[in-house]
Length: 432
Ligand SMILES: [Zn+2]
Picture 1: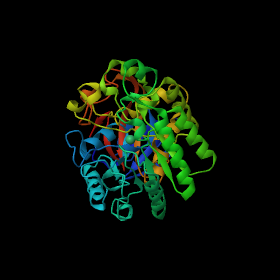
Picture 2 (picture 1 turned 60 degrees about the horizontal axis):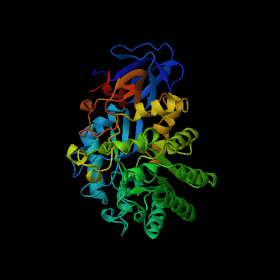
Picture 3 (picture 1 turned 180 degrees about the vertical axis):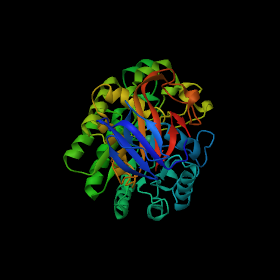
Picture 4 (picture 1 turned 90 degrees about the vertical axis):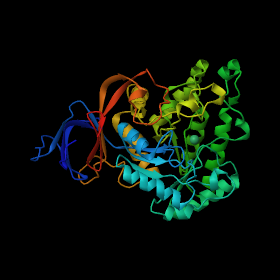
């Protein structure tokens, strides 16, 4: 890494368009155009054939600190994020202790600032201890140094309709949003995988689509009723897409995300009994995958969120029923999106910039991220080589955990460089 505070990115396809030069001075993009001269002492990044996007923003990351530093820390998680092209992540609240007070969210926020690899925006819990009984101190978290705007009990569903209604009413005061992990608890007791043909053949307890869809239907109605914003985490079924599409057609303030793994993988993989495929919500069917891709392309689903869920190998390397749910995702998300959305012609690179940067930043009310690549904007950027083809090797991950479903799989694209406010966090494909 150069110590220069000036960088010229030469000949990059900005948002996949025509080749341009982009000049970064200090923390800011200062010029975009053809044939820009490199100022004396500037670092020059030759980027012919590469695509330049705004730095990616994740609405749904489990950084595990405080409490489960054996699986991830804020430092290792933000290094993984930078390696994956991210400049900001929202850290989910299901830590130990739970991020349900101003003190805990400020601690996570401060650890993020100290890491220097990626901005960390804490998500506040909706209820005390994620127990679903009593609203957490939402206002105190919003007013804290962390300025929390996204609230979620993710990992658990806010299943009590009165608590959900109160949370939706409360967050209006500070333009917050409730991000719901939609899982009707009674319908998913003991659930091990998607309920369908495969679960029937394997004799595993099913997680029916209706357990997700019934909560989403209730919550879009509640959000409309109180005039608030609701965000639906990790949509996984075709029926969920239909409900969100209907809610949006009504003009309600409803947004939704999809994970990379739900855009690619199906419940057929569970036949292997490899717990790397155990995740919540579960992998669904091919028809669901195709509906999710189409909905992301047409904007019904607003954004891609990783649900990066690191687990130590002893929690995943065991029999299916005992294994923890979740997959790491920060370092493979962009490649999976290129594979499923760009290389299939469903989304162009400016669409990727919208779904992986601009929209998640807007939903999280995150200033300075998801901005256009233009003079005067913060230099939060990612440079991608879309022609690269490589095999996923978890041994090379920056994350402390290795629970990826893509080990050994060939995926396209590679993050060449990531810039956080003008500073390279990744250069030549390596963390700096
Ligand atoms: Zn969740």
